Amino acid sequence: MDNLTVILGYGATGRNVVERLLARGDAVRVAQRSRPADLPPGAQFIACDGLDSASLDAAIRGARQVVMAIGLAYDAKVWRRVWPPLMSHVLSACEAHGARLVFIDNLYMLGPQTAPLTEDMPLTDRGAKPAIRAEVTRLWRAAAEAGRVRVAAIRPPDFYGPGVGNSHLGDTALGALAQGKPALMVPRADLPHDFAFVPDIGRAAVTLLDAEDSAFNQVWNAPCAPTRTPRELVALAAAALGRPARLQSLPIWTLPALGLAVPSLAEVADMAFTFDRPYRVDWSKWAKAFWDDPTPFEIGIPLAARSFARPLLAAAA
Image (cartoon, rainbow, N blue to C red; front, side):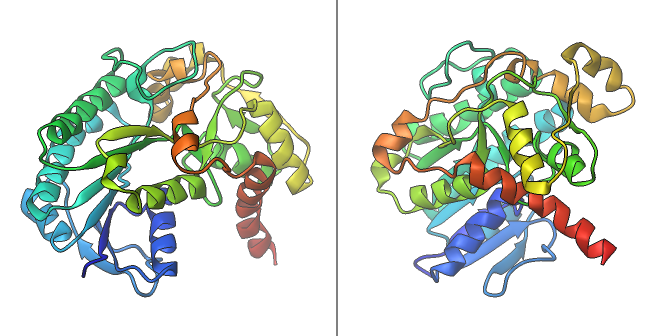
């Protein structure tokens, strides 16, 4: 199929990309280890293990483009074991089949910064997860520079959206508010912090799929609504839910100790530089090339907050 796009990973962003492509009649194939329970009609599925090069090659065969939207367990040991060979296998399969690659990346590899994050900042090797993402970046850049494959990486900051539980604005924050509890967050309440809306990330991925080759072999920071503080976002969510705007921030220094009981918190501590200072993303490059109207928080936050309330209302009915 000339317009076949393979989506590697069916998490929040992968799902949104699939929905957008199907809505306009494109052929879509989802590839991951197990078939999603909510795979929409019209989407193909193929079981795929990204650490098995033959499996990945079969999944990408026939595709014109690939969206890599894979999310691994938030564990540095898993990342070290999986990310480099996974990226190498994806690049090889895309090269073999002449498929362009849109990579849903992040901003970890830029390390601690005090200025707004730009695409041309140098990579860091400070910290386990940032160093791994820097290594992955070097892998795709080397393949692109060698002419093996065309890659466009889009880098969102922390993300949020309807039904997105695994986020600083997910289960423990907006989800807790929906249950009448305080929002529990790691980012400091009154520090400006950028968040990207998952549907905007999906829209950006499709924009790159539709772009000319000149948009590839480079990095694009994802578009975000104007920067707000976590406290302001919790207030928007609370108003939408009709709940008190209660917010509890976890002090950074407590994370290693809390991680003894909740390992994911120890992993978050490794990324303290993303929430111990203002965290802003400069996405002016994107705005000049494509579009500049990301979803306002006044729309996105209520949508996300109410998505956590709906299951509670259904259970009470």
